Image 1 (cartoon, one colour):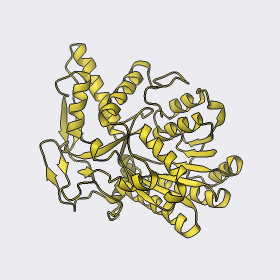
Image 2 (cartoon, helix red, strand yellow):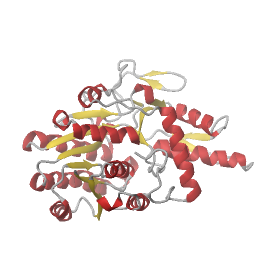
Image 3 (tube, one colour):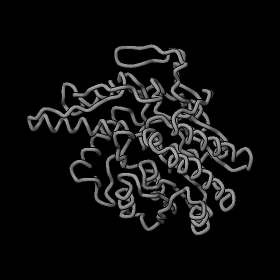
Image 4 (tube, helix red, strand yellow):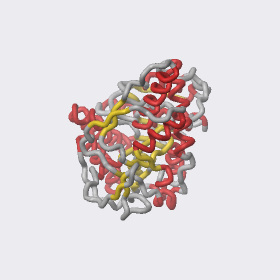
Length: 366
């Protein structure tokens, strides 16, 4: 197989690359290397035993001529994992033009290059649940630790109406529809995955992106403070902390993309809501309690601040469509996944930005 992965040095891209390299596929990675951790992920992949099967091209997907040159030189491709993009809602608000150029124009350029130079390829696009907006119109319940959706006992399916909110929701939603429509209008084989919350190894989480990894880091910092006899430095959470997401480990996400390619005839033209499902749902309060138990503290020290703009109080994906058409279901439990995320984060703290030597297999490498 000849595989192209946009955003190939990011969290999801590097996990996909590691998996397909291990299968013997030839992989071309595209990345701008602007995000924290991307150079480290590139070095990790280049140092792997299958690194000789990989090409790396540094470019901006918004540069149409560069994207066409990439396809001419390294294509035609069998499988395109389009997971590159601007992924932080807060960044989209502060720089909406850059967000548009990366997510909409970049996706358009990839689709058009595929149509001209790799028309037989299968493309999987990484979209987001933010295309549904803040979902304020739903009927909510509330317990001591979380919000609930009594009218959706199996989670939220793909029939939810689109309601783009924030520049990030607008750009990802527009790109989402381009990917779907290029299948309908031009006959390209594409699939759209609207992801909930993803976490796992190679994710260099920050304050505004990768919330599971971010709070793992805060828990470990407070454990270190306790061991040193220091008062912990409080962190902040937005809103009540009862917001719920279904967390999905990178290992299961990689299996999803592989399953989609294997069943590309069934997947083509479709849209799937993707997450860990109800069994892997967590509110922020519940995550912090789980983390406190894992690091051996009675509780974590934090302060509440204002709710984030357009935050969803509850999003758990109904994954029955993916189970039925792709034969895919999450296997990693939230408890086991959080344990592995803590281990990986602790390694990153101990040895710096790159938590393992090139070629070394971490506990949760896909």
